[in-house]
Length: 287
Image 1 (cartoon, rainbow, N blue to C red):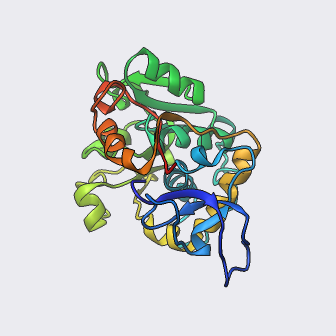
Image 2: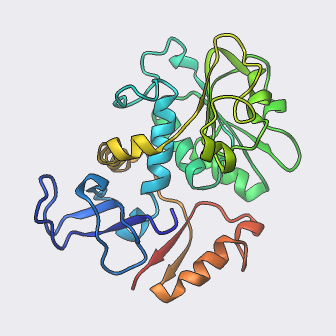
């Protein structure tokens, strides 16, 4: 996230119970565009040993967002956060189909990998262009639609999907998704704009005509970030060290004076920016 993600070495930790000086950690710090950052122990965990810190610093916010979102498709928002796969006891787990509406961005690429690690058999997503489509297929997507040529949900059969993780959040997506969802399925919206601000558990954020037996969630991540960040980061560390997750970095900028250039690249300025099929994350390394 812009100004939230950090990875580095603990310098001081006077009241810590889990961490100590010298530990390699990742998590959240505010602001993070600095050589030294203050953070709470509750927002940090040991970073994966097999992941360089400059790559680790691109993961925490998108990693936790997709980890928690996928877990909440198998549990109620106020229930304790499930450990491991949320679908392990699902009767459809042997043939589970998951849709991730936008596959090539931060929450999308790691969402595909987490869904695969959690046992999804089929993962459908949208991307654009040969390179981007090859990118998401390489992560584990099994069905990819070029969104500039076709609609993802119009390309899927009736009653073919168990879980929709709508990380793109375009208004009206829930209505289109209903036809494809099986009874017992879940549509989870990662909200933006008004749906984020108002947390509306109904139209226009969710479908006004949900299919019987389909659960809908306009997911507010804030409570889970507050309560489960350390737990989630520890699980992500285990998944990285097991080789199930990867850091995908489009470009690395070095030096804090490169922050403006990094934002310009993110906004589409320069080859590979958002307007030119940039995908994955952008790293800003202090020195």
